[in-house]
Image (cartoon, rainbow, N blue to C red; front, side):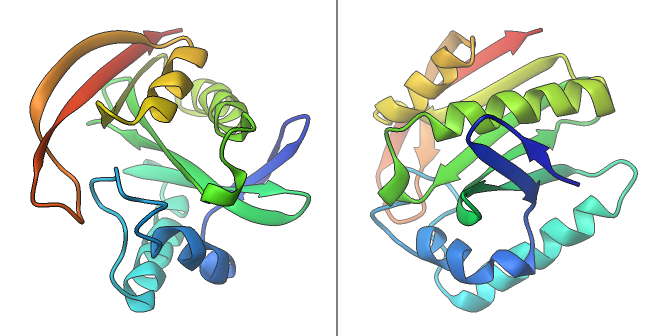
Length: 172
C-alpha cells in the first residue's frame, strides 16, 4: 500500500527502511525533543520496525507508521496511534534533520489523516510536542490543529529534565 502526495510517497514502515531509520532515530540531535527517541542501538531500531510490520497485518492495529519517501529516499516517518478505538488518533512524526524546513512533514501528515479518515473513520486527532519544539508546533498549526493546553511532566529520553508539553487537537 502506498500513498502519494505531490512530492512524497508514503509506504508502511518496516525492515526495508532499517538503514535510513537508524540515521534519524539513533541521532541525539535529530531526536532531542522526543519522548521515546533517540534509540540506543540498532537492535532497538530493528525491533521497532518489526513491531510496525506486525501492526500493519492487524485489522485493528494499535498504530500505523508510514515511511516518508522523497524521490525514493526514506527521510522520516509519520504515524497515527489509535487511542482505544474511540475515534481519536494521535499523530506523530520524525524527519531526518537534513530535510527539516521544507514542509514534508505537513504534507505527509495530511495524506495520512485523509487515509485514516477513509479507512478507519478517524475524525478527531491530537498531537503532543515539547513546548520548545517550535517546528512541531508549526506543523500542528499548519495541519489545522488548535492549542488545547500546556502542562508539565514531559521527560525527553536523553534528558533528566522534566519539561513542559503542549497538546493540540483537531476535528475534521
